[in-house]
Length: 142
Image 1 (tube, one colour):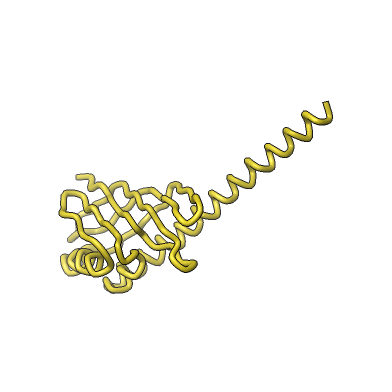
Image 2: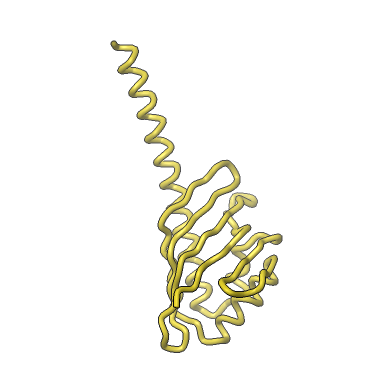
């Protein structure tokens, strides 16, 4: 009986550690989302682009695929110039496996006085200790 109880505590400890690890990644993703929002809302598309890997793929809702940091800067710069502001990302979940992770949630913004928003999903890669987006896609709810 003692062996079974010990095994249960070991398994519970492993599950708790995994949950804490996932929570830590979610917190890291939330911090990165906050930085993204700050860069976007300040009008700095080049700073937004720094959060993407050099080979990033961005699949905008209803738009053409763009790639890389230059593509990110051009795309998000066009949104900024088009009057999108007050961008807010909410991270609902995420998980990390080694040097890769994913995160997902909701986003909202103001586009010329009209509230817009939807869901988003990112795949992230750890490049030299910094998490960068390798794949980004989102929906646009009308």
